[in-house]
Structure formats: C-alpha cells, structure tokens
Length: 191
Image 1 (tube, rainbow, N blue to C red):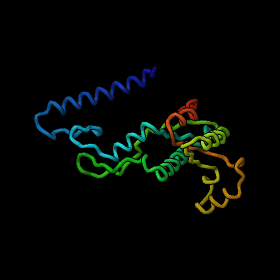
Image 2: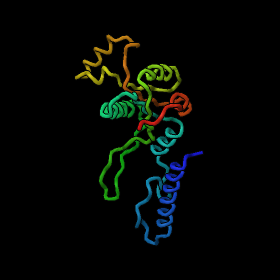
Image 3: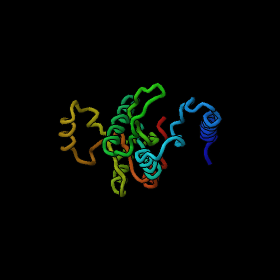
Image 4: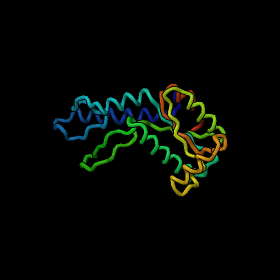
C-alpha cells in the first residue's frame, strides 16, 4: 500500500490532469489550451515516444551514492553518473521538445531516477552483483576519478589499482526492472 504522501501526490496529479483534460475537451476553440505532454488525441503514434515508453516500463535506473560522501561530492557523483548513463543508453534520453512559446528544450531523461544511499563498502558488493546480472549495466564513480585532474590521469591511476582497492563514491545501475529492484530494493533514499 502506498504511503499517504505518495497517495496525495497521485491524487494531485490525477486532479490536475482531470481538470486540464476537461477544460481542453469542453473548449469550443480548438487549440486554445496547450495539450498536456502525454496527450495523444491530436497526434499519431510517435515511434521514439513509444520506444521510450516501453523502455521506461521494462527497464529501470537508479543512482546509489556513498552515505559518507559530502553533499558537494554526492551531487558531482550523481551528475557524472547521469552523463555516463545518457551516453551509453540511447533509450534513456527523450527527444527534444519545446514550450508553448516555441522555445526549444533539449531532451531529458525519460526515466524517473531514484537516488539511493549505501555505505561505501557496500558499493563494492553491489557493483559485483550488478555485473553478474544479465542486462544490468553498472556505471561507477570512484575516489580516483574524484581526485584526478584529467581523464588520462584517472585512467592511468585506475589501471594500476587492484579491484579490491578501488573506493566507490557512487554507482548508477540500468537494466531490467526486476533485476535492478532486487539489487537495490532494500536501500534507503538519499536525503
């Protein structure tokens, strides 16, 4: 059963779109209201949107930050992990769009991304477990990357570091929803 806060958010969203769609449908002037973002009444099927929708239903992504990371480092870690996810998985970024004034907005992540936390030593095990799952990709942010001045320096230091000595600041996992849920379902939200 969803929490009362979650139910309240769902009710507010449903109420907003219910009011919005009734205002649009009762309007006698076509196009007088901007269509809600997911309104398909006036559009044909868009293969990009359908592919993204299917990916959101079947796949999941999460970011897990080391509990011990200071806030600035945690934010940097989450941002860098997001860049890695967007670069390696074409289906996570939605198409470019525009606002009602026609101003362009570059596509954003089509998935919700829960940000979770775990002790740094648990991130080693989580990464190893994720690597063993079919279809799950683990992106990582290490202390080495955080302290390096260039990508080349980070790569050189990482190449000379044993796997057990790598300290993780965060992970981003992407893959089949059930697999990602089984790996991260017991972790707390990052607050």
